[in-house]
Length: 167
Image (tube, rainbow, N blue to C red; front, side):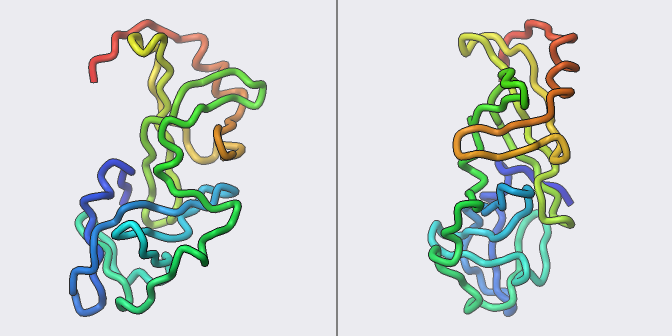
């Protein structure tokens, strides 16, 4: 099952006895490999992917309400909340600007990013191109930018068209 970062805030967290624990508020990513490390709910509580019993588009059921991890266990330099990637600049390895991250789609069966949606605009008025960059094209997720393979940018430059932003 795939889901987008925009839709995850409607996902409820329930425990093994089906008691409502809260709503999903963020996803913690390992920036070295794009894998989901943990899930955040109610802004301050976390659970790891190993705590999941069942997962569908409406709810995530976790083993029990006591498998909550605190923020300290996730304070590592290679871990980043997925929401911090939104509006992050994307560059090729040759330093060509590709655009900004507008959304992230995850693959729940692999607990990883499936692709990031990147849009390149001019003067906030004209959208040049919107496209999906799969995880395998992402080389590195840094603090303030994402680096992708060069070959992807070369394909884009050939087909740039000016399209007004109508979202």
